[in-house]
Length: 354
Image (cartoon, rainbow, N blue to C red):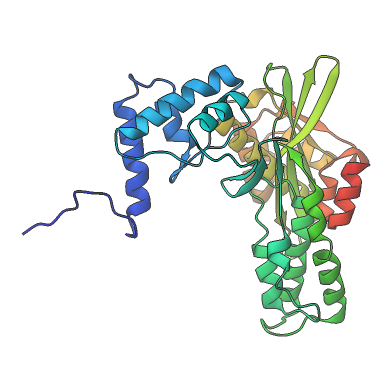
């Protein structure tokens, strides 16, 4: 006798896959009837959450209507809508839906009134003891620092560096931190709450298509990082905004600075590739910057000239980007320098305000 489910159930190991596969199959079957919403289900649906975008109200309204109708076919009504579109808000108010100004998009805080992202680290620090801290508590706070876009990388990397130091010194999980690490730890934690004052605009000013993508890479002895910026022109104003970033700790085994700079260039290339895949931007139009002339010399040359470590990484960089896209940026003018060295909460807040 063979048993089979006639309904999709939650709680099974395969439930997540079945949900995603069902939604994609359903969208594929109705892509002719719903030409706007059906393609978005494949790329913009994350489990049972949908996150989409449109250039204006005219583009947002059809997405809402089609997506709602599409999901009704499989008894999957969408709820808890949020948008910065006043036209959609007026419709939801008429339907009796509750509209909250402060909401979350894939666990990222978003204020629909100001159209800004923010972070609330108070939940991560309110239960920490005021006295000495252990390695376990350090990891708990560092791991709970949720920042998928890397908008707060200069701050989050400080916690990662502290945790790496505990491993290098062989500190046990429940052992109290030494005085020097404890001082650095409390200096970092005490300023985390200030990050709630930092509001980062969601809109990157790319509506008119007159924008450029710039990627900056940098490395220090402790970390290597990359930051992706959008430079756009709106009338007589030029706007430059951080879109995303990535940070990585340097290996415990000592590595030369030029190699770390090369790793930073590789992270920047991967970050750019991810950004272009998600947005459809032409990767060949981007500009990449490094303040290490040695790394630029490697990238501008045939990778087969170098040893295995350099050869493999330069080959991957040249696979996704053209050597002519890489340019030199003086070290003091490199914005990724803050990411590789780290900042406290009050320092990044003062830097942005200034």
